[in-house]
Image (cartoon, rainbow, N blue to C red; front, side, top):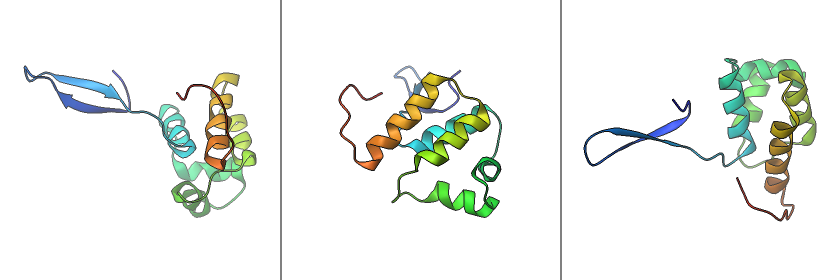
Length: 104
């Protein structure tokens, strides 16, 4: 079973689960938090701020996340190099860097 999936109906009435694509760094962070069964307010611990500030940072869509926030998140959840690179790559694309290669 795919944790974050949208449901679509098959012609015979059966439900098919289609995985959502991660569009932003914040979406990917939310997915990691959901997998670890943690809340957004707990991001205040690695980010060294109040829980309400952590929620506000996660809700801002106009500003990309800085690499310090991502590094603190990776260290806090002890993510592997692949997940850390994926987070940094998405953040760089959001910041406007031109990165060649296929988008995941």
